[in-house]
Amino acid sequence: MLVVTRKTDQRIHIGRDVTVTIVRIQGQRVKIGIEAPSDIRVCREEILHRAHDADGPRSPRPALASSTSRARRMVRGAGELPPS
Image (cartoon, rainbow, N blue to C red; front, side, top):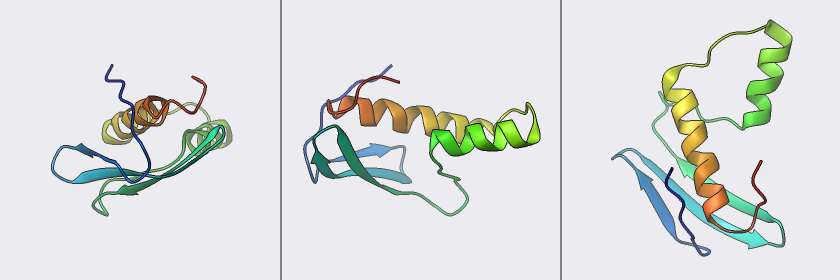
């Protein structure tokens, strides 16, 4: 697992096509911006859980699961959110 610390306006690049920018850190909240090609689905983990609960068990697309876990690691790496 990659864990990094970032400050406001710093970026993390994932591959060649995805950029995550730390937009704002305020208390226990980190606002991030994610730039990714339109064919890469980016959504919050709780949205995945709602879809799972509504539709029954199913596996997320591998790219989505990978992107979500990478984003979670990056947000934790900002040092402002408790681990989930």
